Length: 187
Length: 449
Image (cartoon, rainbow over all chains, first blue to last red):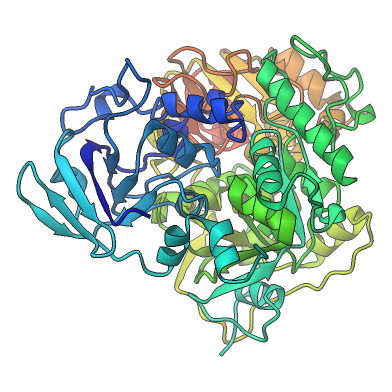
């Protein structure tokens, strides 16, 4: 796990469900096949209505049309991020698009577990409603262990919630690595 | 201190005499279920992590039910079913329900007789029908609606591919013990109200994040008077409030259903709340005072009484899925559709082949349900998840244009049933049937005389 994540913010609202993160017609892609894993990245956030993608203005494309990847590696969202289905394609699509961390008020539990157990990205929680404080394109820096978010564009600094008991799983790189480190699984 | 049903099941599965809310425990799985959408990824994780020659922890505890993308010409969807087929062969998994009519390219031609195929259809309904749900057990499934099986007094929850790959190899998974919220329904339901109305009322009350990380228990006369399928509808939608699992204490109806289906004869032990069990929240509903409700676009918690939205113009009606595609749902719809015609495109999709077969034999007022639906002008699809979650563009009933649809399914987030600008209202099968006949949102009370 990187101690500091730097990059540009892409802002979303509340209840971004897994159908918005990766619409169901892309679920025929099998993430166990590397090329299909990459393809999922090209469709990340394809289900978000245009007006709600890249707040506060909206209508900001998430992907760079040249690379098929996103130049926004930090998502800032409101409440209940990742609600809906159990599809692990959701954190995989975000990871494959280049997202390294999300800061939301809180997460739906299956998405949260998938993000952590698969080691795809770091799901941080904020006590404040940062999706109304930060703008798409702002330059951010997240200090993971210190649970601190710095907005270099505005100079704001926000205290986030510490990762707590999931930190060792993320530090290890996911559920399997963690289980091997702790002796649950033979290495 | 006393424990709830959920706490007791998790304690037993963790090999402990007791657990407390917030404890992180490693629990043993009784059943792991997967399907064609998440199975291939899960199998990939399993072989990558445990090695190409790895064996699953117990092939008789793995249940694989292809159900999502079956009636499509999509080649990758067919390829994914082939991955499941190869895996069950390699691992000697017996509980596999193959779409035996699916081979090669193009849109498959379905079975002529739904009772003569190994294919089952929607996993959450197939699991109990095939005897894989028992009180007191722990069921993990790679699908968020795995919580449906809480209706049998077991702990059932949805997990991802990585977790399921881990369970395949070890039979274990870490869980945090959830607090339990309790919803008590007093009184028995009037004939125009269904379990779907109750759960939409609950989700509207607490919000689509109101039960995040928590268990939701349903109790009271209103719940115990429901049949098993209706209880499944209640537990099915706890995920729409963010719930980790839904649960209903087993009673005679539960035991009768489970015993009649439990082909393996596996012993089970029903679990009940201790008298001093603690609940983090309690809410009492008087069902005699509830009205039919809908969830308006674009969230299952966007509750409105049918009377508030009556007359809203519609393009389409849909009755199907793990939520609204059970025999009870179709019997309800038939009460309204019998002798009437639909005014809008109406799609009927049974959850399983068993239910599909029953549509041909179950009668209402001398006609089979199938005859009633066809003579009303509805279109009948084959057992599958179908348009509930959109799926490939050739999926039966999928919203390929920005239409307004009333649906007996479970989710109405943007794009859920296909088109991003489509508007989906969620409602009971009775309300959907009434609306199909009226051509706009209608109150089932106006049709049940």
